[in-house]
Length: 172
Image (spheres, one colour):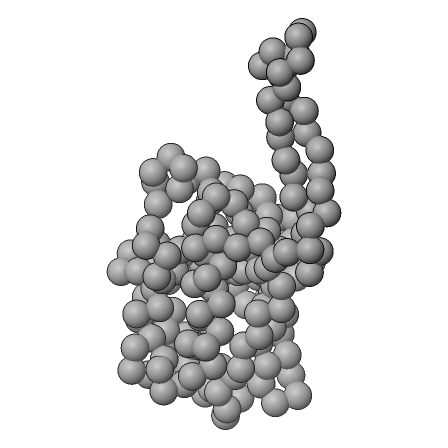
């Protein structure tokens, strides 16, 4: 994946004191932080139905909240137990356990937040969505997950910025 990384330099040229120059580098690396690491681990967790049955709530922090902003699926915010129960709803609806694919890391902010494009597969059907999430402070589990429709990527990225600001302010 080609990522664009914005770099800022404090200029030490006379007359430029305190001003910032910005330039863009094209770097062939995928952004990563604690949230992307939890996201990558979660692919294995979610695709292992037995793990979800035994230890599903260990994927999320005790004060975890899932928000769903998708138009057709939108559900009220839920905590750990209801989020894990919701994973089994797809199996009840379709008769099979879905598989999950992390398609792309869209952006990261700070150490604990990222936006990703996911696809959920069951049978011939697939559902794509954008997820904004934050890891807990240790980078072990999700602190929050926020779902968006794929065409609402701009809204998801704005939410990523808000979530990062919450973390920086110590509110999450």
